[in-house]
Length: 501
Image (cartoon, rainbow, N blue to C red; front, side, top):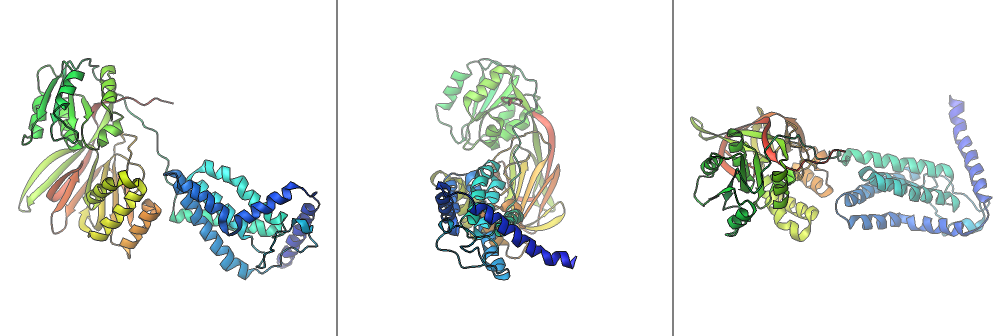
């Protein structure tokens, strides 16, 4: 074994010289200039920084790929230049090994082992490819060309390039621990429900909340034009919204309940629709219309098309039992939950992000909102299913949301039967700094301060002072206990059904 190991370096040296001689026998041509220029372009990472700059100008996956590639490049470059070039001194190829016209000028003077160009090239390509596989495939020939150029120009031996490439790939794979690839988002899927097809609004009763975000005096007239045979009732300021919607649902001849308003109003209507065994038509009248967007009916035309065709989906409904008031004399109320519930700084974070987003775009708005929110606020102490936590955010989604970070946006499946529980804790050392770093790098889902799980029933209780619980954007102060449960496929909602592949 020792004899084999002792001969190993000599075998590598012989193979290096054999391969270099094969390169030296190539005739002179334009390819010599090409590889010299490619090698020079990659010096000190200039080529990869340029590619990253172009990618970063496009939000979403291109920008994430650029950041991930640069992170991998930084790790690979540091390990190669600071560790291995010191630990493995080696003389570079000499003019007698290759024709002079092929040599790169000036010739590097550091250790030949390993190739820093190769390490950086492979690290960037693999790191970016983890986020965007098609980009990784496109960059692979460029990275391979950079690696080969170091042999072609006499800067490195082939084994230097192989070792450097391995270091680059290893560095990129190592960054997965710090920056894991985001899970694939499933395609939208719906379970069809039987509902009546309605034309001209006949048999449809609509409750209109005049306090909805986009309500104007012309809203009622517009709805009457679209649904001339529908019963339309406007809920005025000061009215009991739940009682008014219930009265609309019990109008004689009603076969479907319509609702115009924000997510809080829609949630109340959903409970009434289930209670009276009616399908629900959601007309997007709120500021954000999260539920309508997930349904695919975020415009009046979409909702009308589903209604006239009689297309609908089965949707899970969250059920929340809230306990408020004095501990010795609690007041219990029940409510439906369509989208989300939260405790802690999440509502403040969302409000700040949405205020900044039109001017700054989502990534920068999210970053600035996070810096402001987590810098100015304090964590909340509570218990979740009997376990005590000190949390910045407790976020509960009715169904799996994507992406898996502090800013969930999309819910492609509406009847998966689970709650998406996300807790960002303040218990770990340097929790605030860790959280801000995760927000900056887009790695909140992988951070040690983030805890992701799923459940069908969850109990949240206050410790000391009562909590402010937000359900579908509606704040509920003075909450001492809240019990969440999933009622599977309880609601029928008019919705266009996605095409099946």
